[in-house]
Amino acid sequence: MHTLSLTYQQDIEKRGYSIVENVLGREDVDALRTAVEHAIIESRDSTSVRDRGGVYAIRNVTEVVPAVLALHRHSDIAQLVEPILGAQAMLVRGLMFDKSHESNWGIFWHQDLSIAVRQKEAVTDFGPWSIKAGIQHVQPPSAILQNMLTVRLHLDDCPESNGALRVLPGSHQSSRLNTLESETLQQNTDPATCCVKSGGAVIMRPLLLHSSHRATDPARRRVIHLEFAAEPLPEPLQWYISGKLISNL
Image (cartoon, rainbow, N blue to C red):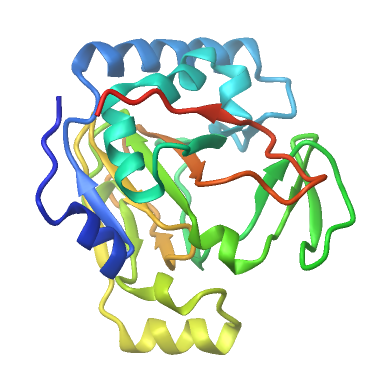
């Protein structure tokens, strides 16, 4: 059982992220590792599993790994999400990223701007659209992204040498950024590196600018990426998943 600091909500509000250790116990981590490895073997040929000489991502992980979908019922995760989004918060998307010796990759500075929905609908201010692993994705208005929260659960230790997430604190407050605005923030903001031990989590706003380097000492770095939203989408749009949290607060 993790213990939240008194400044957790303030961290999310001001910096756009917080690091919380011991969200998952050792048994939970071991069970998820086993479930993920089994799913990779069973689903290697599916469109949900992306492979470049070594599996590095699973989209729709809540379908491929049912144990991940069950995490929306985990009381410690509810304690992370509900203070920010409220009691009606729901799980709306799940991904799994995997760095290793065979699949050592980095990613440029970016914001998470797309959401997964059940089907394409003509709704004002939603777009552009794309299809990822057979599922419709769309970029919604910034107001929706501002009412979302991402929980990145680490199944392995992730020091800086293993390609830890880098963030620009406070960059979530600028809403959706164009290229020039993003570059200006990169030049004027000191990045923070999110080193996390197995069982810990990075909690962040989707609009926070973030990136990662290739690992200099690569080892397994499995991260379960869960996105939560505070409210339903405008009709007729629907979140692809709508797993309500079960709170023990």
